[in-house]
Image 1 (tube, rainbow, N blue to C red):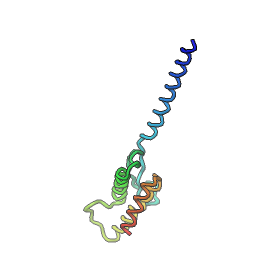
Image 2: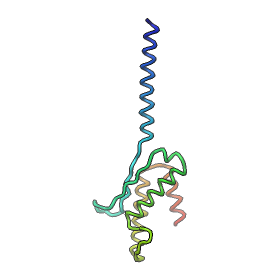
Image 3: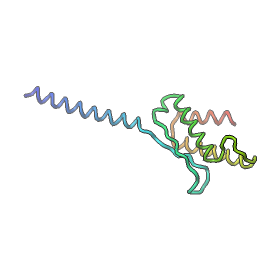
Image 4: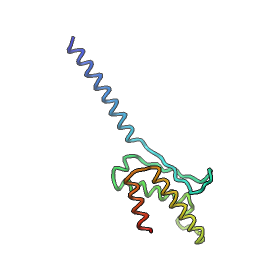
Length: 126
């Protein structure tokens, strides 16, 4: 009888442990989404959702890919489309908007590797 009880306890413990590990794995594999918003104080400012997985921040390549998506979204939401015809003043305002939107998205995501990529990119431009 003792053997049967210990086997039952062992099986239940194993099931709980497996469920716990599965829950932790699911947490790490969740897909997160951040919105890149135009840097306007208006509540109905244009927005673009950018999806990424938390696991992408485990590598430099994955982090660079997320950053590229964020930068593309920031440019798009602020009107910096490739081949777009803007005056110098419009382009300057659009670039400022995109820079602010990108910085805001990076700050909200709050990942050290992403922040580092953003800072390196800003140093190259500046």
